[in-house]
Image 1 (spheres, helix red, strand yellow):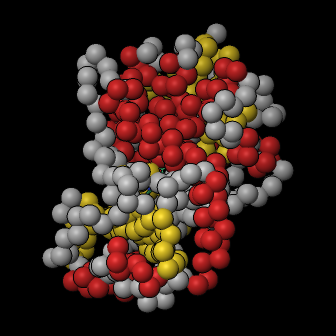
Image 2 (cartoon, protein in one colour):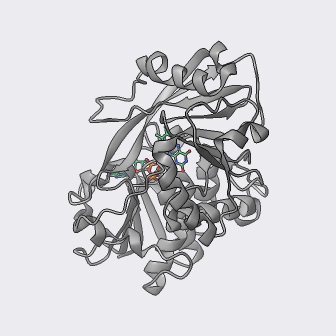
Amino acid sequence: MDDVIVVGGGIIGASTAYFLSKAGRKVRVFERDPTYKNASFPLSLGGFRRQFFQKENILLGKFAKEFIFQLPDLLKTKKNGKPTVSMVPNGYLLLFGPEQAQEQYEALKNHKACDAGTKNVKAEELQNFFPWINTDGLETATFTDSKIEGWIDPHMFHAALKNKAIELGASFEKKEIKRINEIKANTIVSAAGCWTNELLADIPVVPQKHTVFRVKCPKHIPEMPLTGDLPSGVYWRPEGKEYLAGSPNAKFDAPDLEPEWNDFEELVWPALANRVPAFEELKLTGGWAGYYDCNKLDNNAIVGKHPKMENVYLATGFTGRGLMQAPGIGRGLTELITTGSYQSIDLTCFSVERVLSEKKRAEPYVL
Ligand SMILES: Cc1cc2nc3c(=O)[nH]c(=O)nc-3n(C[C@H](O)[C@H](O)[C@H](O)COP(=O)(O)OP(=O)(O)OC[C@H]3O[C@@H](n4cnc5c(N)ncnc54)[C@H](O)[C@@H]3O)c2cc1C
């Protein structure tokens, strides 16, 4: 019998394979599409942040930074002695209107308890830090400016984790699993992303289509952080000499990954031009859409052992933050599988039981 089988070779599957292999387990990863054409991770914005409401998400964001900074050492292989992920540590800036401010003041207590290193200012002071912002309608903003948040290249991150896992003895095989009980192994990990509900019918994680636009603007602001405008739901960041901007319009049951082009004129451009006057001169140069692995119960992760299946573990439902949480989740699942409990960050709050008994524990800061 196999030791460990991981279903899904995306970013969560690759990270779990790396940590389990490092712990001495023999891992086979089954991935149905090794081109990863529709998988979530290659279509993501690559952002890593610690600006969340819930403590566990803040701590996972802190670990992401630690892991990414140490990645060249941790994930170097005989073939590639210096893996990189093209990190841009420009930070995150989250903007709140009066209707979101109270919740953010609560969130800041958790930032403080977790020593997140975030800064909070009133809207009136914001232009001292970010002179390109129009603060109309804002009450407060939280940001980091000490290179502890930013973004990375998702493909390079995945490749580095996968290649290291393979060097440590894991195999990645092209194979589609139709039913979880067709696999026989000491330990089974479902890392099937937004398709988890097809494998495990009691888990409410489904594809939710999100569109990202690529735009060009004569004014280049290279130091701009990944900025989330909570009143409009629009977020953006520099991408080389251009910018990427995400639509707040999320769609369930989308028949394909065609971008929602109308969102640009109707939702995204007006919000961008309102918040950054320089963006009035934007030109749309492209775009794409990808699926969030949306946990329909509460937009929060589902991680742990399935209580009704002897040897089945799962990790899914990251709803827009699976790339940055991959290191912490891979490490946490490995601790749970190898020792029976979490040793680093306690992820018990994300248990499968919580979802099966419909106990919501919402994370409000979904971008
Ligand atoms: C537009 C967009 C922007 C995003 N921005 C960010 C961001 O800035 N930061 C961040 O942290 N996250 C971001 N995300 C979210 C992030 O991409 C996902 O949360 C993350 O990729 C989930 O990882 P995963 O490994 O679970 O799923 P995936 O990356 O989708 O991988 C799952 C894999 O499982 C395979 N699979 C599924 N079912 C089976 C089966 N039955 N048999 C075999 N293989 C199977 C699939 O083919 C797929 O390759 C974004 C997502 C999108 C779409």
